[in-house]
Image (cartoon, rainbow, N blue to C red; front, side, top):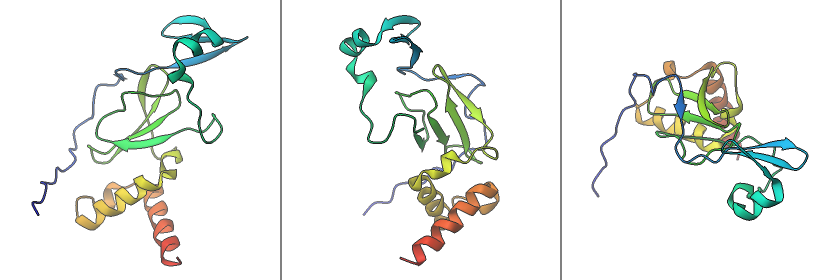
Length: 154
């Protein structure tokens, strides 16, 4: 079996200060049954009929903030979504404000750590030697430790 070459994350900045996401579908509830979409005001029912994909039903309540990680920003994003860029060390955390991705201080936010797959990703990178514990935040280290302790008891 052929092994894939491992690409190490860079220590260079991910992108300029303002990062716009291509193909996003930000919608904002303006109250009174109206939704703002792409700078235009729509009656919610009419927009739902035109673009049902913007109103996908979620398993949990709609207030949950989704978190994900990867090397490129998602093509589709919702306001409040958290995304961790793992192609730079230390990893950088971004939040989508409805128009663009803004970097947030990962030491002041822990919501991105609730993604079990992200914690497993970090553990795997540490095991393979791609990541050193020194590049992780204290919160990431604590979450990894709690995850490993929890899995020892199972």
